[in-house]
Structures are given as structure tokens and as C-alpha cells.
Image 1 (cartoon, rainbow, N blue to C red):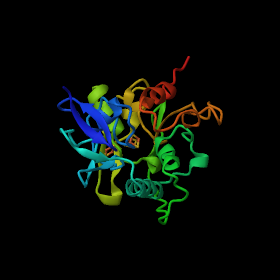
Image 2: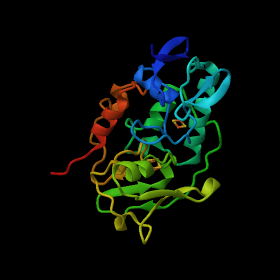
Image 3: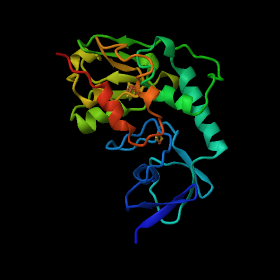
Image 4: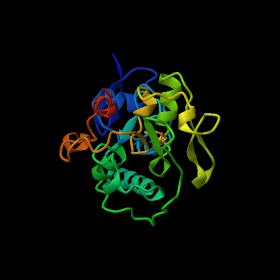
Length: 243
Ligand code: SF4
Ligand code: FES
């Protein structure tokens, strides 16, 4: 008999070694997440996947499932915490959606809609961070980076490269490029790499491809962020092939 955890009263089976997030996704239960992608090592930084396990707040993407856990995923308090985290991410960068190419395809924006976020609540930081447009086909806009490290892990774990890292402390933390000049043009990243496509926001974009999908046909016009097999839809949509 398989082992189970209970999520919002529903029995969810799990295998040894799975996290609560793994078990939930396999059972088609959506737990909000931003820094987690199946296939990459868990990171535990965004805290959007916070659930209550036996009355204690934990990150479900790093917490191993264990027999008999009673987990709450959909409480008003958790929704409020998650909304606050999203608001903090919005005000800490320059997430000006009306002028961002990623609008409608952006996981951060979709999560904000999902959590009924109507404003940023906190004062805007309006940071000024460097744009790296040195690469022939890719651009980094650090004002939109949410430091999820998906590109860091994709480059290291899937592409077999080590193009990105996060450096600095506190509010000065930012995405850096591991090349002699620190510029993307001097790295070995290629357009086809997963790291070029995995950014859930508009921080790493493919040049010469913008506003190609009409309003009403973008990912989150057609799909809810709560669809648990969304990863493939997003990746398929964001890989561009030049003729
Ligand atoms: S560039 Fe994108 S994928 Fe990389 S850390 Fe920033 S938000 Fe995450
Ligand atoms: S998805 Fe779990 S901490 Fe980000």
C-alpha cells in the first residue's frame, strides 16, 4: 500500500524521496510556486509554496513528504501571505507590465492575478540595474529579475554550462554572468539552451521576438496558472526558432 499525505483533506500518495510539492503536482494539486520547476533541484527561495504542515509553515518544494502529514494549502491566511510575497516582488523591481513583452506569458503576473492582487501595497523601489544587451540573440533586463535562480540551475544542471550566478547581498543581490567581462556576449550561452528560455518573468528575453502573440492568445489568457502541466506549455511557447 502506498504511503499518503493529506492535502486539504484529500489523500495524496507519495514515493519515498518526493517532496510535498512533487506529490501534489503528481496528484494534480496546484501549490503556487515561482522558483520551482520539475527536473531542476529545489531552491526554496521564493516561499510562495508555503503550506501549513501539522500547523507549521514550511516550503513544500523542499519539505520531504512523510506518512500522515496533514497539510493545508488553501487557507485565506496562506493566500494573504502569498499575495504579500508577490507584492514585495513587484515593488522591489520595475515590473511595469504594460510595457513588458512578457505580459500575458509571465508567471509572476499570472500569480498576482491568481491571488487577486490589485496593487503593490508597498512603496515602489524603482531600482536602476544594468541591462546587458551585449549578446547577439539574448538580453538581460535585471530590473525584472526576481532572483529565482531558474536560469542559474538550468544552465548548470541541464545545459551543462555555468553561465549565471547570483552575487551581492541584500538589496544589491543581482544576477551576474560568469564570463571574463561579465557580459553575456562573452559567455557560452546559446539561444537553444534551457537557460535562455526558462525565465518566468521578462528578465531574459530573446532578441528580435516581441509582441508576436496577440492579446487574448497569450499563455495566461488561455491557461490558468493553477494548471499543473503548464510547464511544457510555457516552454514550448517561449522557444523561438529563427529561419
Ligand atoms: S533572470 Fe529570470 S530565471 Fe534568472 S534569476 Fe532572474 S528571474 Fe530567475
Ligand atoms: S517554489 Fe518553493 S520556495 Fe519557491
